[in-house]
Length: 371
Image (cartoon, rainbow, N blue to C red; front, side, top):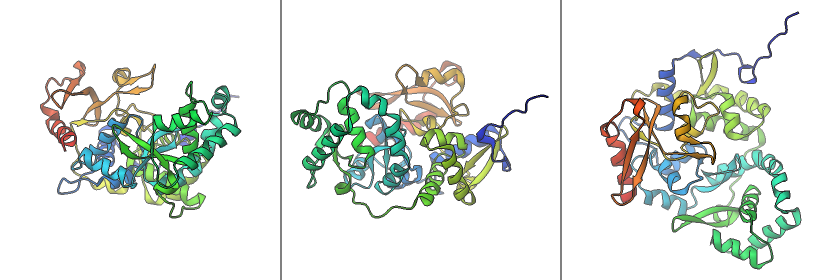
């Protein structure tokens, strides 16, 4: 008897949505990431982070531009001011990786992700001899030295740990900070120089209540697809690192608030509001690690396979700053520090030979840095 093929979990929910082409998918995805109002204005800094739910912020300077490229009229100073006001914080809500997120969202996200992330890191913590006693001692010290609104830059905080007999050598310092953030003790708060300082989360951004688990799952799914759609459930599971069961439960709770599309036989979920968008931004300068590229398990619609190795440097996990045209990655770009402007480097195969197509984005980036 022939064996019956087992359906992939991402297609367990029968695809019943509107069929779309790749071009339509990319137009909708641009509308989710870079929405434009009728007057051409885009969301505020806080509104941008809220709509995206969480934005990769591993490289601080690039992460500021990831926000600025979406809140198009915002300057670097505007983004830093929002960080200084505690309306947006930087922590590790998903995948154990730094992201910008609103404080109100951070706590319920960590309630769903932190314990799984800590369990997955148990072996590494053991290798570093970071046992529970040591981690608890670091927590108690952080609560003491950061109390009363104190903020310490990274090196000062690590030196405080060292003076107390808690060694930060061999990546122990990084993992201590990571663990305390997973436990909602600390977060990265006020900007200091080219980075941020560590603060106590409950003092920097006091809790105002959080949803129950069911509502948190609904918000998680809805938030991801509102900022990243159209995307698949598999994309969401990769991005959030929730279990498949939790992802399916969240989708069931949020399904009535989303639109289903079908591309290549697979269901993609999106915000209904994006369907009415007629005008989308194009000729984009993405930040390094930008959600438009990084935020999916399957990046093939936006990042052609022949370009992938030039954007994703696999040996060290770096995502280069990318050029996007017609929704697809077509090159890279870099800052010319001396001239304070962006220099584009299209891939030869893309057929783009000059900067004209990216002129508006270059000017926007220059204004972002200048003000």
